[in-house]
Length: 139
Image (cartoon, rainbow, N blue to C red; front, side, top):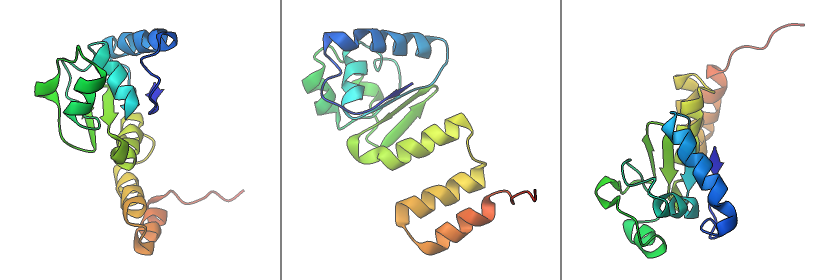
């Protein structure tokens, strides 16, 4: 489940989505939240027992008065804890990398080349990325 950043996650109409996120986490599925979506998870206690990040612990405390996960907060762009992947607004690229890794979309060397290319924009990383991809099949 992907929860994109927004400032509307604590609206009552989204409670069912946050409840579903809780159910998914409880069964080991993957839930990914970035920016404002992390505040909704914090507000519902879903970050109190899991390592996580966001736009700063003060951000979570400001938007989620019941937040009790300060001791598990990691001051990093993106954090993975089992099936939970969280990121602050500046951690989108690393968040995407961690999601791709969790889903097993790329082999590790392809994922690393992908990340290096998109984090630097240097052409040598694009060519390294292309070298890691399987060769096309002749039809």
